[in-house]
Image (cartoon, rainbow, N blue to C red):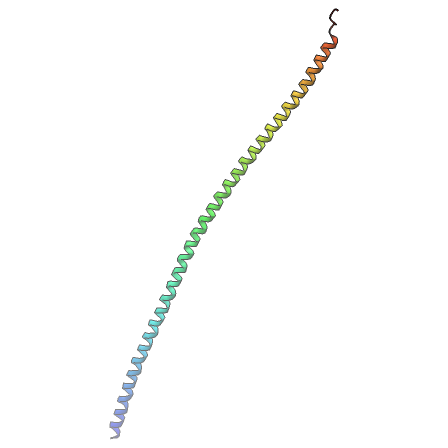
Length: 125
């Protein structure tokens, strides 16, 4: 009877060990599935963030290139405007110079005419 009780006890222990091993394997499998699901969920977020960052980088490069082009064009426009302004100033200087010369020529003409009129003999009366 004692040996049958020992065998029965060992059989129950063996069965419990198998049940515990099965439950342990099931728990490990469940935790692996949970871990995989969490990692997959995180990877989706990380992948989306990576794609967004990539898109932002591309747009930032494009914006930088556009800003550089705009700065170059602005510099060229400023140079053209400065050249135009200089040309207008020169035209104003030439006009002022021409007026000054014209005034001097009138003075000279008036002086010559006055000198001629004063040195010419008076007409006989």
